[in-house]
Image (tube, helix red, strand yellow):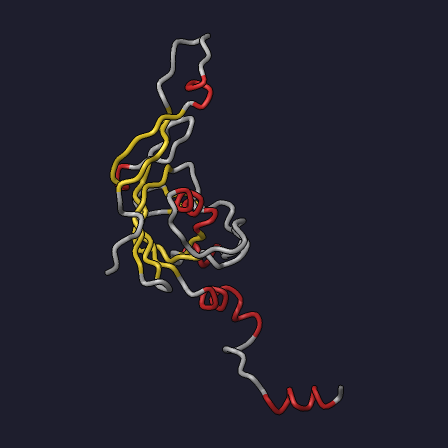
Length: 175
């Protein structure tokens, strides 16, 4: 198992306790302070503290495992990117299957996941770009073609489409 490249000590920004109401300072305007600590203690800065959850992503294509903390009111993909963790994605809007994962444990809320059917959601698939963790969660990335086939394959064919060189030759002969 490869170590997560983000599993190091890093600087992050967290809300800074500010002066009393009515006074304004540059520090208060930014509302942030620097904190150093291990990744497992990181929290994604937000104006209202939300419960955080540990997210473990087994990236099959790259052969790495990423572990990071995500507030339950933040998208998993966006939070990973803010922590310099590279995960597969394409549209960022929940309309494709590039960031599809299979949930091994835990739960992800994904009301905007249009790229996968309710049936696939029920089978444990989720989209990281529009997924919010509701508990500690462990997921595994999926091959986009596999998920696409599960989603739409029954509508287009009885199996994977094979190349028909003879038909292609006939079609090209007309040009």
